[in-house]
Image 1: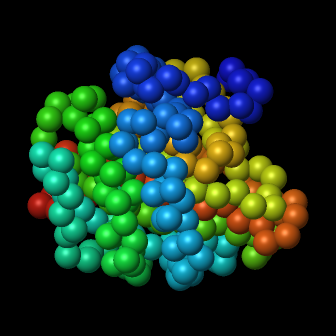
Image 2: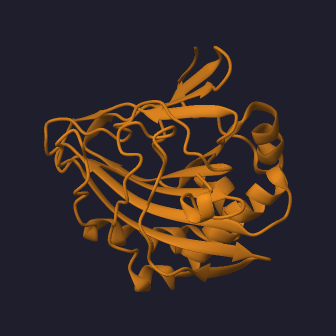
Image 3: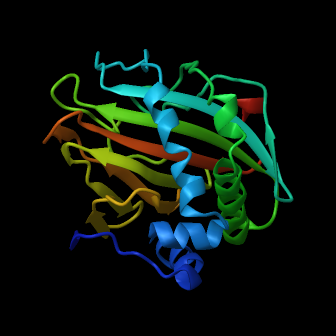
Length: 249
């Protein structure tokens, strides 16, 4: 595995799409996100306080209490974001051996968050990225707000381990890190030995993943200060429908 010194290998906005197509992943700085998504730093920062109001994840099979989350679903067509009726999050066991095969009902993202300009800008932009990668079409987007803390002494951002999500594009936005060590991001070629490791530390930096080509994970976090937690926004985009719809598994 190549060690980038844990510093994210930020792509320039002009070359992010090319890097994603060539190597299956790309990392953008907050400034790159703002430029490509067409939103300001203040519009992104306005989203942050809602992570303080996430309910506990009651489905952790390892018995942990370290994860809080909300989940909502959207369809993006021709740059228009449509909120879908609230639904369970479902993944097949082939993609999530720990929590797959079960319907998990999480509280939805709060309406006041969905109304913020930054929220819709991120969904429109990531849908455009997916269209550049796979061709223009409607995108079925699942949005997950996560907070991982150290209530149990350690927090696991990816308790299922290194994985794919069974979608076309994954966008992992780092929203906040506070009082922690760990939380290293690792990306591997799905069919080869190559990999990269780094730590997302800047709020609203993002890792873009071509889910067909790479697997990914984040290492556990440990307390290293007061009020330890790691907040992320994960958007998954899939062509054709949500997982579990009409036999699309």
